[in-house]
Structures are given as structure tokens and as C-alpha cells.
Image (tube, rainbow, N blue to C red; front, side, top):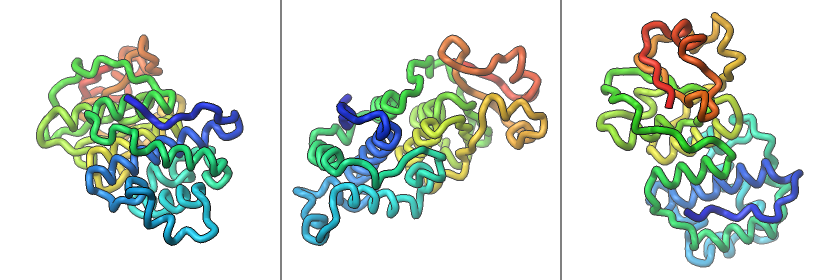
Length: 249
């Protein structure tokens, strides 16, 4: 599946460009699904070109993210995901190239393929045995551990009936890349906000008073150690969450 091209991005712009490319793709997909009015997918960017005045393509991107952040601080506000990103510093010619390439994106690709490609672009693990996850009932609560950025929750919501991110899941994220992907997952699943996305790392969760360890979950899911996961069932998770079914894939 094709994504926006980061070829030629300099190291000092890498984090910002990665974050911005992921979010521009997400906005274009939301527009294609009629969940947002057409702006980046509008033919010839007609409205923007009519009213932009002296503003450039980078300003357009900044405005798009600012507008989207009103409802979804995660992932559209860099401060909310703690991303080292400054959209205003991106070269205008790079953003212009992206905008011209939006019509070549497959904006109706299968949800699983889309989320996998976004994970790849963010440099996150995406090869995991999702089929090993258990059936979750509508009343049950699930914690997704740091490392996968909501990919496991996305799989369960899109393959099992009567589950929603906001009602059934807490997604713990250890990096800005994970938190950004979790926000993209929220958009893809039509979730109204990202309140269930929390910042946590394997290190901070060692504290017995950590808020996640004070909550009751029916399932704790995450990456297996051989897939890049930072947790082990016997050494940590079984002690931290004694009443939960723990599944690492």
C-alpha cells in the first residue's frame, strides 16, 4: 500500500515530516469516508487556492491539523502526543508534493492494511499474531500495553461485534509514535475522542502506584518479547494484573 513519500527529508525534519505525513493521510482518508468535508481531496484544492492569499502549503497543513485538533487533540496536537514536531518548519515544496500525491493514495484500502502502513511509516512493529487474541465480550475491559500503538485494539474492534475503543479499551503508549498511531486508530474506528489513550512506559509501570495497575482489566494484551515486547507474563504482568487474562502475540 502506498503512503506519502518521505524521500529526501533531512534529519532535522524527520520527526516532523513523519508525524505530518501520517496525519495528512489520515485526514484524506477521513474525507474520503465523508467524515470530514473535502479539503485536501477537493479537486485542484479549489477552495484553498481561492482563499489562501499569501499563505503557503505548510500554512495549509498547519491549519488542517489545528482544526482537526479541536475534536482530536490526539493525534493532531504535537504537544498532546509529545511529538518533537514543528509543522511550520517543514519546507513548503515538500508539503506541495504531498498534496499533489494525495489523489494517488488508496483512501479506501482495507482498514487493516491502512493501519499497518501507518505503523510502518512511524517505525513501529506491525508483524504480530493478531489471530491469537481472544474473543472479548461487550462488557469486558482490555488494556493494550505500550509497544503496539493500538493495533491490537483496532483488530479486535474491526473483527468482533459490539466492541468500541471508548467502551472496552485502554491503550497505553510509550512514545509519540505509538500515541500518534493510537490516535489514527481512533479516527479509523470512528471514536469520538482519545480519552482512553494514556501515556505509559514499561519503566513507569513498574511503580506499584501506577494508575493502570490500580484498575481492573479482563484482558491485558500486547507484543510478545520475540516481537519487540518489553513485558514478560511470569516476571511482571501476572503480578501486576492477577485477575486478567494476559495474551502476548
